[in-house]
Image 1 (cartoon, rainbow, N blue to C red):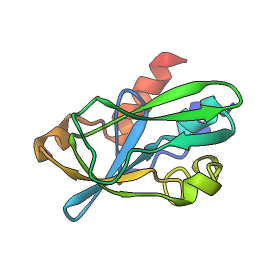
Image 2: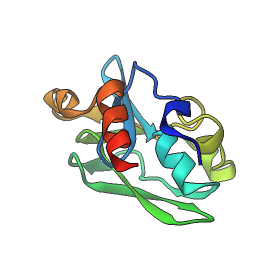
Image 3: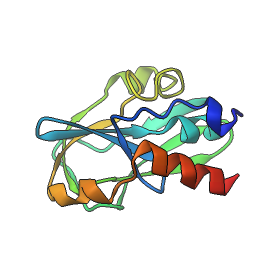
Image 4: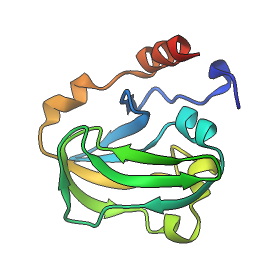
Length: 134
């Protein structure tokens, strides 16, 4: 496992306390799991992704990730409707380990309440939270 200061935590995304990241792009939010989460889970072997059209509340379980080490739940960082899924993860779930903030994205969401974005942590706040976990 990497040390926290070795992890990539881009400043253009927001983070949830459950280790999902969210990147606003126009009127959608792209969602994935943080470098910290994928590092702690180890090699991702399977991703259960919600279907396009499914709606979830902020903090609601919307999928699962399986690795050699654990089964982990995926939670919605913002409420909304799933408008796209990363179908590449069906054949290549390891993209989450290789590129957690690029090719390893999981879903795109049309947010139901844009104010929820403000509740999410900046990269600095997320890093401080992680340092408190170690």
